Amino acid sequence: MSHPAPLLSTTSLSFAYEQRRVVDLWSQDFGPGLCWLRGPNGTGKSTRLKLLAGALQPQWGTARIAGVDLVQQPLAYRREICFVAAEPPPFEHLSPGERFGFLARLYPNADASAWQRHVQGFGLQPFLDQPLRALSTGTQHKAALAAALALGTRVVLLDEPLIALDAAAHEHLQAVLAEAAAWRDRLCLVVSHEALGVVPSAVLELAAA
Image (cartoon, rainbow, N blue to C red; front, side, top):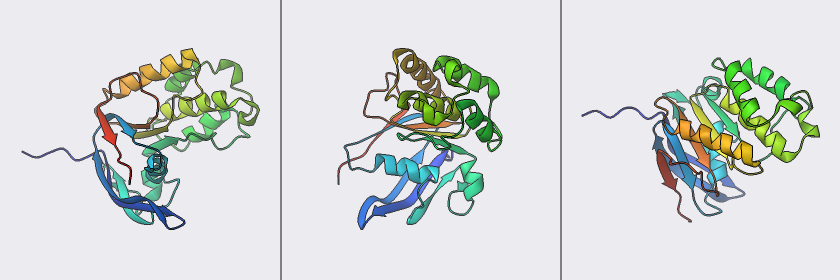
């Protein structure tokens, strides 16, 4: 019996910082749904997300989303993926609303109604017209999450998404993650030291070197 092709796959993906190999020949297949990527500090969890997002250039290997290759088709690949890092989002001179408008022009499946839903869920209404650099770290994080979750990409990468969230925003994100666990044609890959509060579709445990 044939198996369905993976939604996201890595082939020998590798990256080193100053001669220290953090990600070493990583080959992995991911199906749709919610995958929790776990492991001790130093196992390269955040580095893997940055490689998958195209924020770091792999020194070897590649990744593919539904056959679209990170190395050979970088622009097409990046339209299929969005990434929320643990650090503040880029374009800090823009307001949350302006930033989503900018991103929506780059991603063909961006959904303005989904953006409004996440603005409500994360309590961003009072901050929509203020520059990101004037907002607290927690509000910047919520704005980045709201935008990423509304872009409609095939793959969503979230690095420590539960940090710096108030109770209402935490509850909203958990509801979104529960929805992601039921996805059949999309993937949400999450790095989190904190328990997700929902049952993921899969758990990938990284071992210390």
